[in-house]
Length: 91
Image 1 (cartoon, rainbow, N blue to C red):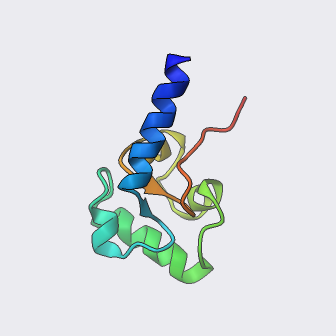
Image 2: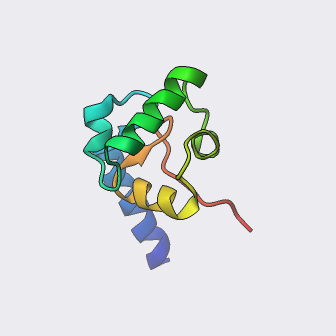
Image 3: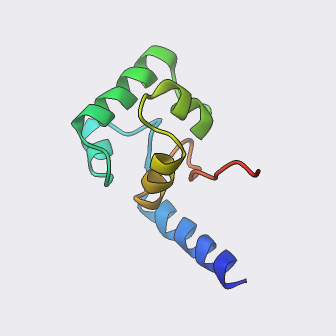
């Protein structure tokens, strides 16, 4: 129960300071921990070429270097896709 409450609290905090991959400019993306200029550029290029990301899976497919571990770190740092934090697929 505590773990669930902690996860909900983290999601609430992240949403208050969230940067969305679909609307952020380069400077906003670079404010997110773990996103430097090369990754910010890759996100923007993928978004410009293919339109808004449908979800995290779409972003991870279109942006090289973002896989599950990186997506978790980016979500913890405040990045969202379409307003949603990354949620690992249930196995």
